[in-house]
Amino acid sequence: MGTPDVTTLLVNWSRGDHSALDQLTPLVYDELRRLAQSYLRRERSEHTLQSTALVHEAYLRLIDQRNVNWQSRAHFFGIAAQMVRRILVDHARAHRAAKRGSGAIHVSLDEALGVPGLTKDFELTALDDALNLLAEIDPQQAKIVELRFFAGLSIEETAESLGISPATVKRDWVTAKAWLFREISRGAGS
Image 1 (spheres, rainbow, N blue to C red):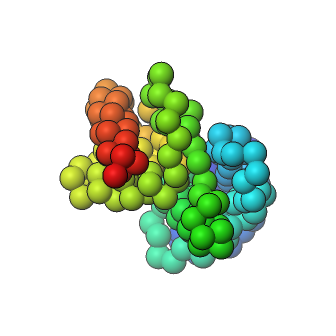
Image 2 (cartoon, rainbow, N blue to C red; image 1 turned 45 degrees about the horizontal axis):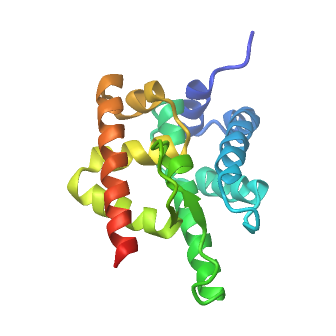
């Protein structure tokens, strides 16, 4: 008998099966590490948060979740995206406060959101602020950005997680990236 898939383990864990967590840990930990390494490769070279620390913090926050009815692997990584976003933004704000504004995390828009031809740097905290504004205007687009950018989910995984079509994800992803770029550029100019 083979190892159960991530979704089955998540469901079993949410029903109180502690052995499911033991089986789940290596599966999701490796995926979280891959996502963290991929994200942090886009960061500035002197970034002080290491992928291992990011993975540990995200993992600890995830296993501490209470009363979550895990739906699927995509649902789990959707929650993971929120955790990673919070950790990175908290780290950026703490680092910035420690340096009195001189140490903010910079990410290239071209690399971060895959908008070709854009090279202007922006702070991760500016992205977080812009995403919060987008969530007020269009929660679905904000969620798509969070899942694609912070969790590294594919178009298909994002669609599954949100219960919408891949075509809708593609359309909203393009629209959200353009809106975020405009909003962040407007904020940088003030």
